[in-house]
Amino acid sequence: MATFPGAGRPEDGPEKRFADDLIGLDPADPEAKAFAEHLDRMERERPGYTVEGYLAGVADFADSANRASGEQRLVAVLVVGLILLGVLISVWFGLGEIISVLFG
Image (cartoon, rainbow, N blue to C red; front, top):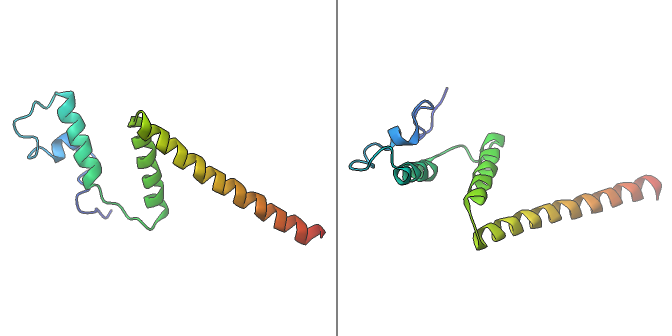
């Protein structure tokens, strides 16, 4: 199985991957764990032009939208709503063209 730079081993958590960056911090501290998870998200590299890469990007967006609050969450919901509106309009026009070709 090929690994990407910065991917680390799957059995290692972010706390173990970034032990050097977390020197002097309590490993049981929730803020240190959150910082290690942040570093993990920032340094994660995955293939961008594959289905798995796109799905992982969508998962990252959903995770960050769930962590957000206030205006950031509102913007995330607005972005998702606009994407769904674009898909709905495209499907509507596509079905209209198909029906006009078949029955028109």
